[in-house]
Length: 168
Image (cartoon, rainbow, N blue to C red; front, side, top):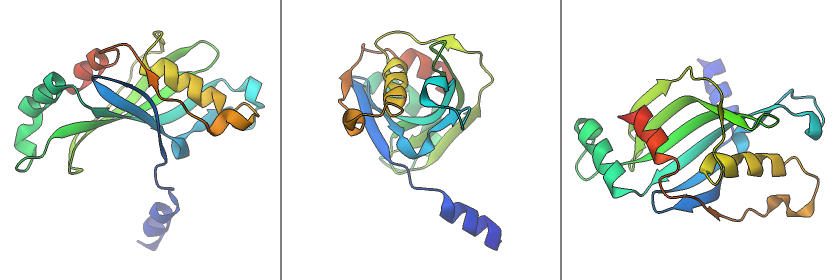
């Protein structure tokens, strides 16, 4: 319908910002997906942040596990290598939960989508989620450096155990 077309047209294209990497992957978030709660609060009063993050999977073992599980859905030479994570971050408690996971192939084929009903968990230090929280808070700070994002090196396999549990 015309309304559905208009609504889709109004959705901004993702604006991916790379914030972390390790041998396992390159991690980014979509700046256009950020939603702060309460939405009318001053930056210091923000409690929760909703964000869509992406892991470009480089870990060959993890890619192979995904290939074994989802290979039948892939065309010749295509590879499962992108994971979108829809997260809720609690700024004050420094906790998070993943509410949705989507796995895509290199060619953009959707391989799996899962809605999750997990509980909030503590954000482990030196992980992608810790860097993501810092970056989303930094955007709230009135300073000239808020647009300068340095890519952080994070612990090896810090988030792959998490991803494997959801994907396999």
